[in-house]
Image 1 (tube, each protein chain N blue to C red):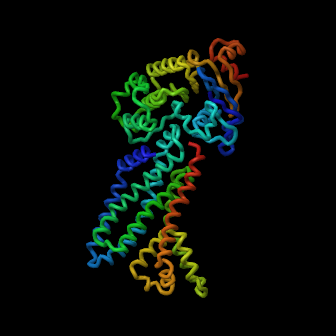
Image 2 (cartoon, rainbow over the protein chains, first blue to last red; image 1 turned 60 degrees about the horizontal axis):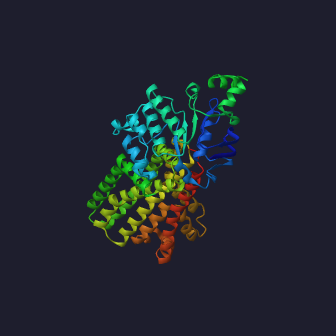
Image 3 (cartoon, chains in turn yellow, green; image 1 turned 135 degrees about the vertical axis):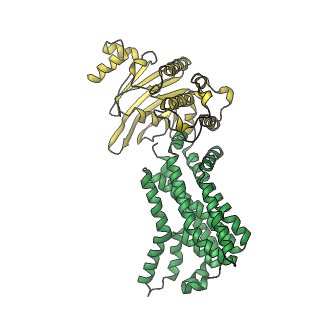
Length: 234
Length: 255
């Protein structure tokens, strides 16, 4: 579904992405793992077209994303740090996104809005929100339009245990519907029951892209966190 | 595109600076027209104030606004929207609000007190100047990542267009006083929209006699139909070139 071929991106002297080639298929739940600053977020942003890669190309459903801005209709993106217009209320942000996406109300997936209780605080201004509530808004927006691909950048960071559990259940439900889910996270223990594949990056390079079973077999570990720790210390 | 323009304008209205700017312009223009017994004289006083305030506000406010809406831009860029649409909508929203503020603040008093060709000329150039400086401010804001640097650049640009440029021209004129530079000066004015507007309005006021021989040359050029059309085309170019440059930059910007 998403194919990246030799994507490179440089910020000044720093090589954020170095010849990354990945093939992400439908129905998979892929974890992007790697140390801080290894290029995970840059990679995600290049899929979204927020970062324009220096060389290489990314195709989405067979179309090069450079010429096809409409591919973002099929992506739900939850950023690491959700930044919203500060003096809009939650309700206004939600309405604005619905308006921009132009989807009919009956096709919307408002499950997370209801479960997170965002309905009760629609009139709160974005600047008054806590980090966790912002994350809830980001998550609700990512799932709202029923996209085929979900890209979640550190989804559970800052969420309370209850919300984090709701979000995980939602991710599993969407994965079972045959959607492609890309997750980055540093909390490996909570990825265990979510993911089917692992992409490991370091210093902008792709180290490996394996299914979780293969990874466990190769490292001889049962837990993802231990398996990754073994890879990192090798 | 319309939807985004709508959200930009709602946001600008909510922030009230543009409303204050409108009220300020309204206060100045009405009081000037009431101070002078001859409204043509009032127009001349208003000209000098407008040529300083309009570029300054039209540069500073949009530049700060673009920096402050970086979150909004980031959010929009991750949505199924063309970058071109996003940027042009932001430009249209800002340009429309600044032009509208000028129209209400200065345009309506001009139409009320001095609905002469000179008044219309002033209204037209004022509206164009508002849009030109929004375009320049957005170019500066997209080029400089750092907010303080961007706003600094914008203030320097304003100083350049309203003070330094004239100083340089005077300097050149005095240094080369022995050479016939009058015709060249007509061309040089194209490089400063503020000067061009000032000359266009002054010539309509028939005070060009005060400007000596250069004034006569200016009258020869800007006084004609063709000269007028060319000057307006130059002003419109001042809108298009910065917008085009900033759009090109924004399309490849990493957010």
